[in-house]
Length: 271
Image 1 (cartoon, rainbow, N blue to C red):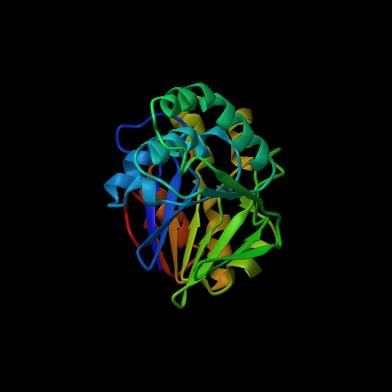
Image 2 (cartoon, rainbow, N blue to C red):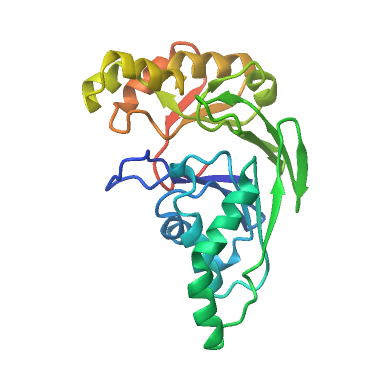
């Protein structure tokens, strides 16, 4: 099982980083987790045909995690998908899918009238709740409310297990009491750090607003302590807040609390 960081960026557009998305690869099959800006381009850049991606998992529904969903759906269909797209996520995943389909209804009907087959248009939705688990192909997937992220109640972390490896995608937010046991023994823990002092310095927020933003994200200390307590093999930092913060500082701060390998993730890195 392999992890590909498709997009490590944050909401502001960046010339170097695409919107948040990750890929899990098992036996040559690609599984998409979140679908931020440029996700189709990044899947192609990683060497996979978009039409062959049949599974999409969402952690939550802040826009920067699903901005690319509609583009992914229609591109997948236009360029050869014949099987249903299977979408998984917390509430309100069914409503998100329903509204996206309505958005493309006009375009789909025009193309169908010209003879484009409707194969590949169907979406099968599975709503996931914390504490649940599913098996997809040869992958055991467990979900938990591993983080708290402001007023986003419906957010989940994913634990992927296959090929004797464990990859834990925590998603945005500060750790809940469930994250350490959920991440126990993972080979890879991916977390999204926040450097509160740089929120004020780099993006001009007031100290008061910086505190609010920081409260919605994991501090470097929280990440380091979580990794140490869970005994994970390595930590990968992605989706940094603020987006132009010094990633080497984030690595240094996490490493004060965790003695293992800490890697600042870049787009298309593979592990």
